[in-house]
Length: 238
Image (cartoon, rainbow, N blue to C red; front, side, top):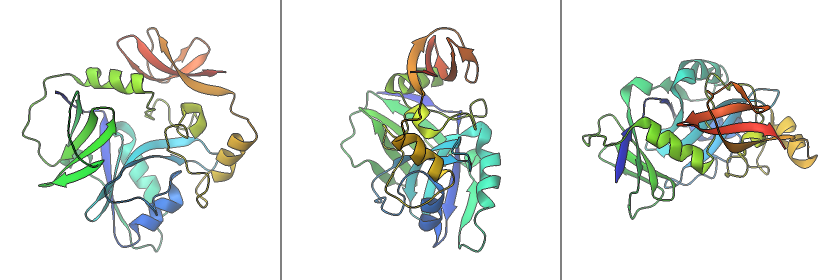
């Protein structure tokens, strides 16, 4: 099994008796029906339907954890908190308090989400897991770039400060990965996201390419979403 310590991810906690309903009303995916042993990809959009963040939504004992790019975590926490209003919700940036590891070539026999002794292990792909906790005793034997390369090959989008507010969810294939529920109720940007889906207005899609570029840069007529060791995810014309 390979293990890498992940510094590029931040973490928000959303707790309180209205946490589930609050997130359901804000994110692109169905949080209302999310089971305790399941995690979900989701996006948070502007009113113009552009992604402000991509989340891995993880049910927690007191609410939910939202894994996202660390460089946007403080700003997202502040902006998302503006929508709490009178809801019984507490939202906090817990990025500095949690250790996050990526595991692959692992053979855990478990449900998708398992909590044990304050550490949560989440399956995110074939023999690939995220592990989060206030402390993780196991030491890494691989690099974060090794992990990023596997994320790229799995086609998983990562919205950071370099790519924030650039793409509707379909441009990064979020709906193909199960991160958009078109049957749920309204959320910010929902009408634009739905229109793009049903009117065939998505003219750019995320594809894998090879080359030297960084997220946010233009490459071969497209915009780089993620990059590691010469492998790229690029939103390009289709």
